[in-house]
Length: 67
Image (cartoon, rainbow, N blue to C red; front, top):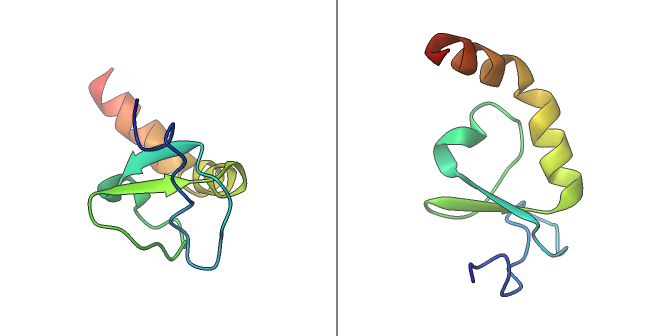
C-alpha cells in the first residue's frame, strides 16, 4: 500500500484534500501549481485535472517521441 492509500494530503500549497494520485516532481513541469515536496508530488482530484490540462501538449510530444 502506497502513501496515497494511507491517506496522504494534496501537496499543493493551501489545499487540504486527500490525494488521489502521485506523480514525480519532474513531471510537474510548467503546470503553474505551487507544490511542496521532494521527489513525489501528491495531487487531489481537482489539482490532478488542472495538471492534466496544463501539461497535455508536453505529454503528447513526449509520447510521440517514443512511439
